[in-house]
Length: 389
Image (cartoon, rainbow, N blue to C red):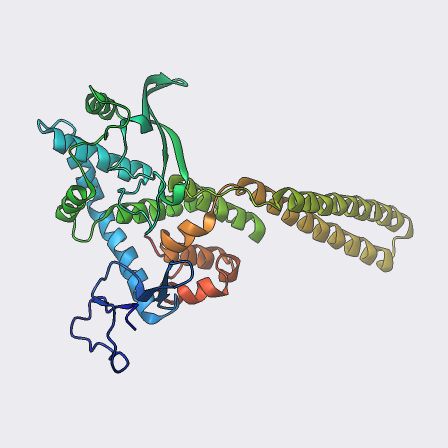
């Protein structure tokens, strides 16, 4: 018991469970910013272990719903916030300018604020507020675009963030100013930290954080991409490919990368073998159809007509099977270095996906597996096909 910390979140009036006689708990917390209920340090490797709520629990579902509702509130005031930080680029105070440029990056590039290191993480990972001069290069012109900022740093979980982004001229000029007379290891935003930024975000909108910006931009991007990419007349595999492409646009925005799976090449070879075999099967089916049509011209009886119809259906069936395999191959190739699951589970309002499924007749299980359907049961019940984020 002396090694165990309990987190009662916001329940200040909750009765603390009594420890065994003669013992006391290591710590009692009331921290609503973390999701664990109980934690302890195990005695073999010294790592911290947690007990958390089941993802499908009612309390967890309510917390998810509140998270996405906060992001929806941002939608109503995001234009005002953007206009304000654009005005602040011209401020006479350097700290206001730095805060405004950092907020622009958090909004435009879905960068994290910079205080999200995991316990025990020793790698040199940074976020927006902790960027150093060495993490960016400024290009007045690059690849035919003006005012390009080249980012290169390690983000959360030591995942490299590398991006070349054209920015507005005033942002570019401000960055030049922030870098003047500084060494590569100096802070880019030397008048800013996460506490200052978070306080400013709270002043702009109650409950606003850098993560709310990520959730808002991820969800709004998914909704826009689904509208652009979905063709109502497509079959289900083609629509799911469109969904994954929309999801991939979000994963790229949020820098959700992964190394290609070790079995990737082998699985693609196996899939290509299936595609080649299916193409041969289709060629055979077409030959049989051609032969049946020639036979029907000579015989002109009901039996030969039925044979032609049967062969036509066989060709259509094999064509659909081939298309399904080819869509699968395209999907795998496009997503080999993108982790689609992170954004889908943490940053995308599930009601957008549920509404899309209901509108286009896609079974929910094609998008969410059993565990995910349990986690998002509230969204499946709540959203109809006309839901707008």
